[in-house]
Image 1: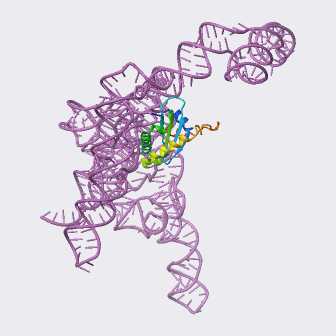
Image 2 (image 1 turned 30 degrees about the vertical axis):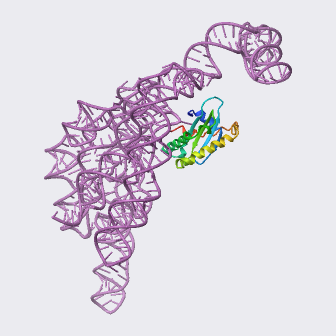
Image 3 (image 1 turned 90 degrees about the vertical axis):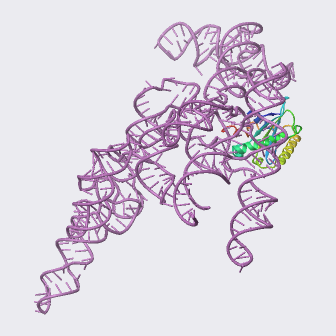
Length: 133
RNA sequence: UCAGUCGGCCGGACGGCCGCUCCUGCUACGGUCGAAAGGCUGCGGGAGAGGAAAGUCCGGGCUCCAUCGACAUACGGUGCCGGAUAACACCCGGCGGGGGCGACCCCAGGGACAGUGCCACAGAGAACGAACCGCCCUCCACAGCAGCGCAAGCUGGGACGGAGGGUAAGGGUGAAAAGGUGCGGUAAGAGCGCACCGCGGGUCCGGCAACGGAAACGGCAUGGCAAACCACACCGGGAGCAAGACCGAAUAGGGACGGCAACGCGGGUUCGUUCGUGCAAGCGAAAACACCGCAGGGCGAUGUCAGGCUCGCCGUCCGGGUAGGUUGCUCGAGGCAACGUGCAAACGUUGUCCCAGAGGAAUGGCCGUCACGUAUCGUCUCGCGAAAGCGGGGCGGUGCCCUACAAAACCCGGCUUACAGGCCGGCUGAUAUC
């Protein structure tokens, strides 16, 4: 399992299927190659100070680590967008949240959000993260 | 003991399970991702956020652009003195002013006879020095009053009023009103005179200096604001690790070479092109070019038709350069200790240590035990009290917070701001005891 690091990959996943919960939003995208599962994390500035954002990302990362690999589909990218509740929510509960969110993603058709209006650029959820940090 | 003030320090501890980043040794030299550059992947060992890492407010190192040595202009900054430093607006030691009983704290603390400007409201007046009230003098007018007179009236005096002048003591306004207090003096007053204080320029003494002190002299002159413009002195080239260096796709575009195809026909009017002629408008001509039409080549998964787009196509190599990768990247004005110099900031010598290097960004996640704090309950005990009860201390249980402020991003020196809780030391004041 790899980390997602390139900005272009994040933008691609942002167009994919998504499922939310109290502490985070999961986005996913199936790739056509044979590569491993890749996971990225996005925590925007509106969630708090740098220390709090760090903590959110670390708890989310720990969630993914605890997860069984079979919950995710192979050759896919996932992005977890952190919310402020991830700071305080009970860890075991969050783990259940993540399993059910991934389960919902699995049952969804292949590309529900892939077709977007041509002239409307996709909302860039990760752009605010890059500068000034 | 209480209250205060200054300085320094810490900023949970131990353990379990599962992980992350970097360094290093060994093994492998394979596997995997990528077009490439390059990345990832095994086992052992070691290291891994802060006092502010923050705000980015100053000062430097370093890098590039420039050549910026000097001077000038513009802009910005600094502005009591001395020291310290790589440098500073910081720091240290002084001086002056202000506050506090005191320890101590605070100060944008140079220039207002270079010039310009501003001083709201209130007030008479706010700057080439002011007369509102009041006080005083003179004159005018005249009520009541006094004297004389039978009376008309005359004389004296002069409230209120009017005119002229003197006056800065008093009232009132204001942030600020033209030295202060006292005595003399005067019509009333006034540095008008005198004493003391203040102030001023010079002299002497002390100090490197800021500045302080002394005696004599001068009747007093320079209102405030430079955090208004400004003048003066000194300092500053610009941009910043997203600096910079190296490697380097895809696509588009540039250059060189090679191969293949093609370089065909007609028109070429006119405001094209070329040629002739003419001063010129123009006229005439030509077809290697532009342009137009046809034909031909290429492109859409393929074939045919219609239509469209395009005008050489393909290959190899070269150079610039984008994404991306590597580097810069942590041994440094470094930390600690001792000694020495200095009131101190700091500096020197010796010894010793190696102490994060990430990059969608590692240093964590989940727990357990303990400590600390706080709330509450139980119990024991001490003091006061007749009792109820009040106050203090110890032990135990439970709950809460389970820590505050906040996370390196090239590196240092400072400043500023945020911060639960706690520790240590110096000093000051008050109280008690000896």
